Length: 109
Length: 113
Image 1: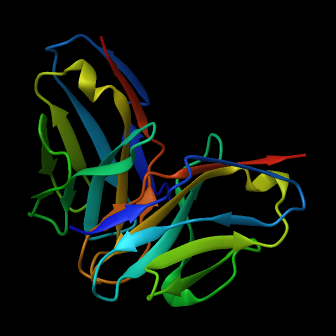
Image 2 (image 1 turned 90 degrees about the horizontal axis):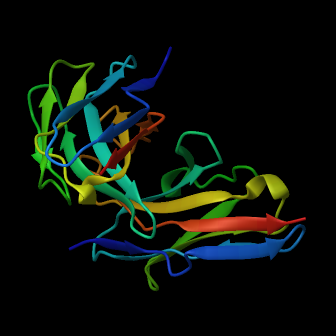
């Protein structure tokens, strides 16, 4: 079965430090991958998707098919980045989304 | 556009009681989803509806039923609530058959005592 893992439940970094939230998946095909974010007292929302290859709020994520990873990176963390981050996978365009367990990022001022 | 709306926002039930969580979207989306969010477990799919008139089980369907009333509305019913169903429930919708994003509702916090 397809699976998404996020090894860190909690991640704390200092403001201005680089941040990397890890995501690994198990699927032999070519999935579409997403990062969703949930800020405090806000709705879960899409941050970025693999197919767009764009940078949102300074975050980027590169799909590494060899390592089956889709890590989320930002060179300089900001306090407003503190949130819950979910990695998600979709096998095909017609399929449902599978979410990872989430990583809570805390940026220390 | 209100997006995805959910009612109620909070609910406390006693074991064995039943209730229905309501969800509606005004984006003319084909697909709708129900998730539960638990600490350390992330978001787990309960049921989804790829299009009006169809529903399918997700990862954790036991103890729940759903109804896709029309294209706009997708309800989740707990027939006999159990403490293990204490959770935050999220409804979401998406256009459906594309690499599209999901739009989430604000969530319902349910406590079963």
